[in-house]
Length: 179
Image (cartoon, rainbow, N blue to C red; front, side, top):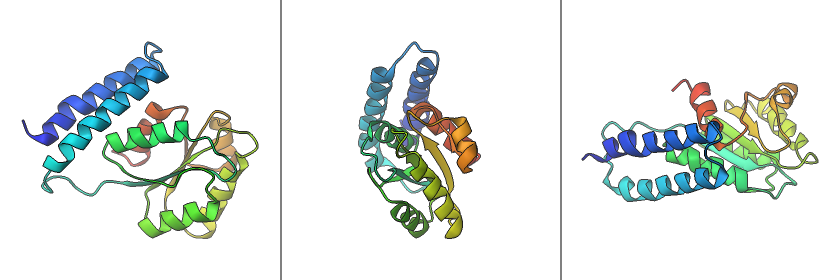
């Protein structure tokens, strides 16, 4: 079986089922993580077998937990899920200043910037990133998420998207990139 068929017909379909069960609250975070980890293992085995034919350049996503925040479990899960769907993810880690995020996004010509914050005391750093992106003419769309984040905060800081969880983040990115 061709590697691309394994990815499209089995791995992606499988992780979609996991995501649907998570959305229906039949699966929970441990099952979502286990599914993402299983897919990551499968992708690592298949990647060396992929040829350049038919594999166009993937969208680039810069992802980070904002300055002052050291919580990255959610961000790590989002990064893993996005990688499993074939996106090129540049994970800058946690406690990352706005300047570092925007500079990297401009350097790699990112399509999306994903921001995470767990604490209410750090969520306004997301606003700093959005403002700096506009100042520096960064073309990337900015998505946000985290325990203290919601849709109204997205609107308040003029981010391009809000995601409640890792499964939703994949759908959001696909929607924003129209894929």
